[in-house]
Image 1 (spheres, rainbow, N blue to C red):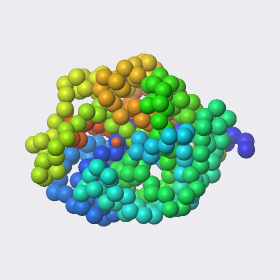
Image 2 (cartoon, helix red, strand yellow):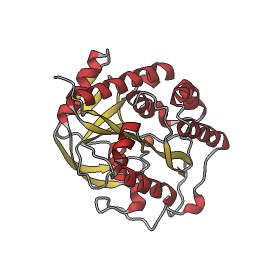
Image 3 (tube, protein in one colour):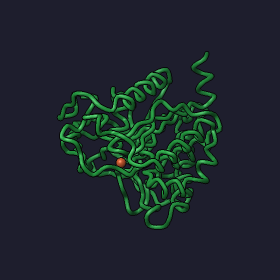
Image 4 (cartoon, rainbow, N blue to C red):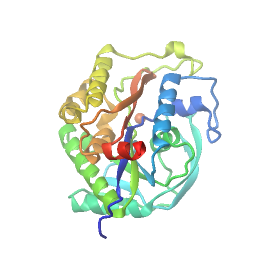
Length: 304
Ligand SMILES: [Fe+2]
């Protein structure tokens, strides 16, 4: 297939998936209901959505830490999925009825490009597969209308089986494969990296989960790391961020160890323009940031 001139990544976002944020929003698809909670992060998602609403997008490509695959990288390859997703740790917060469509042609192209780049790739063809709650939560908070097809990519265990450096190298290769597939198929894609930042957390929940008097950062050291990482993003220093990523993952027990952010930065060719940090806040003590990258070509389109 010839490369299409219209195919490109129109935006990228760090869009973390704590189920608490969906719980606190009370969308009709979620069974539990909340009074309030985590407003700083939810209003950040609102600002991200307002930015993205101005863009012409065909498809959302999301990399989620909670579809864990031990043999290579998998992509969803069935046109429709409809079922109930229950968070295994927080079943009292997240019982979400989802109904989504998949851009199978793009998914297959990502698998082909990944294989061509030396990665182990699989297209997941089981129609009864239950889509992971990380994918669902990031998509729900970013695009609650569910009016676009998605491609979901699994998190391989390469960081855990080898080490953080090997993991990052492989995720950058997967990001490049994703970019090539988007260009080849002519898609205008939004990329979502679904991970949280620092990830130490409390192990006891208050009686009322949304009681914000219990919510705060778990550990000052991980807060300092998160602020450093966000500062690098805001200054467009994503190559430095990649160089420091293995240490960040260890020192802040970061969920970046599942590879989503490294994949995003690789796909977007290490943005040197400033990211917009829409919000930072904690969920059971973990650090979460909602961050958008709008490439200059996209910004120019919006300005016209
Ligand atoms: Fe997670």
